[in-house]
Amino acid sequence: MKKVIVWNWAYVVSIGLFLIFLIYWCQFAYTHGYGEQTSFWIFFPLMFLLSCLALWGQFTTFQIRNKQLEVLSFGSLRKKSFDLKKVTVTFDKKVIISGKSPNMYPIDIRDKQTNKLTRINCGKRRTEAFKVFWKTR
Image 1 (cartoon, rainbow, N blue to C red):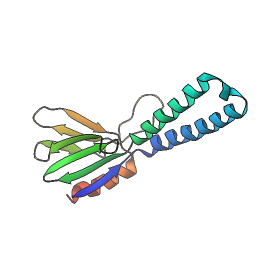
Image 2 (tube, one colour; image 1 turned 60 degrees about the horizontal axis):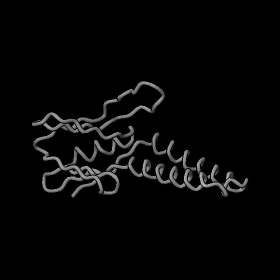
Image 3 (cartoon, one colour; image 1 turned 90 degrees about the horizontal axis):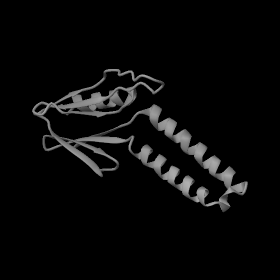
């Protein structure tokens, strides 16, 4: 069984910086007396949990087992299996999204029978790791 983990550095860093800012803001608000209000105890834990969930969702694991390509995200809670003979995998193509979002190099898995596209967001460095993984399968 071969395995590789992919993610997008830009999104991971931006979510990490937001978490650091959120922790600082929470500490600042608590020391200035806002901890006595109910909204403090609703807002900060909820935002922290949602940010951690978004950070956790950035990491995707690809593994090949018994001629099946398995895509695991959210720590194996979300699993998709594809037959290697029935899919086309494309990667290493830059996609520019309008606005100020980071560039992404998605890994596209297209089912040949249903023509359904599954796109996994990935950064350039991790796309190179996926390329090595895919060539040595």
